[in-house]
Image 1 (cartoon, rainbow, N blue to C red):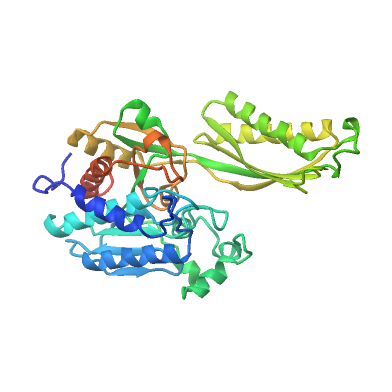
Image 2: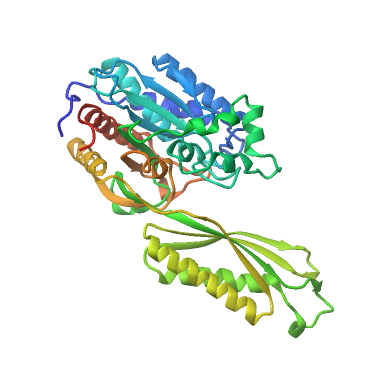
Length: 422
């Protein structure tokens, strides 16, 4: 691989560790989990710390109308060329871990630190980003910040999204002093970035099982999400004979098993029932209503659509057989994303040049890279997560693995900043 990195010292694993620990202290709970739900006080505090770090590196921070944080490394030879963008996110799920998202932001900071201290003057600028509201935990939709930048989401619709307390996202942005009226200005245009590169923990066991130290992502799966309302009749559990019951929960149990069965027989597709709410949820009442949340994912849009259709057909058949009513609502139906093969090749060659065992793979989890791929060439590196655990206080990735991934990220950034994507 041809790039001007030959005289660069390696990334600083000790500095990576310190940065990770600094962010892990924000939103830390007594049980060891991290709680930085989007736009809450801990999330804002994490972004303040990030802006402080950007200033210390000489990258003047900029915050857009949605709260995405950017910082550009000065000194490119040709400031007219579009920059290379690197980063991830800092918000977490409730009870989350210390590496999901944060590892990518810290890796981007380390790239900037190495370039600032010892790097050559590059042809293109390098810019860091931390996207706001990557997790769907608060407003029910993931990758909001990057999706607004890429033009995926309609700003007016985004402002109407509500959290569990009924507060709209527009109200939240206004309270934080951001500018919901200018949300359309968040969108960037094709050509504004040469490429987007992201490092993230895997959130699965492919790397651990294969013995690879690094994953080079070729495609990112996307979900079809359904909310299914199943209605029966709430009756006294003691006074209602079994043949006379219209038990919505029993019907829902069949649906759950059907979703698993259909998912198991479809190659390259996963199907999950992750939400169940029963009413009236009382020991002595036959459940009269159940709401299920179903998540179907694949990198193959045709197979994903086939599974979604099969699931809905099975729900209708179960409801008819049990004299229940079923109403499916399609909450989202996103298209899988193939990452730019030229960027994939750059990342793979950078790993090989450093002697880091890497494997091409798909990501079953969604990431900001899938949104940015709609705007510019995008690539992604995955580092192993112990036992595949993520979104959990047990989430763990050794710092040496993050350092290895960051080194490959740095080399790829150097190459793209000098040569572009071709």
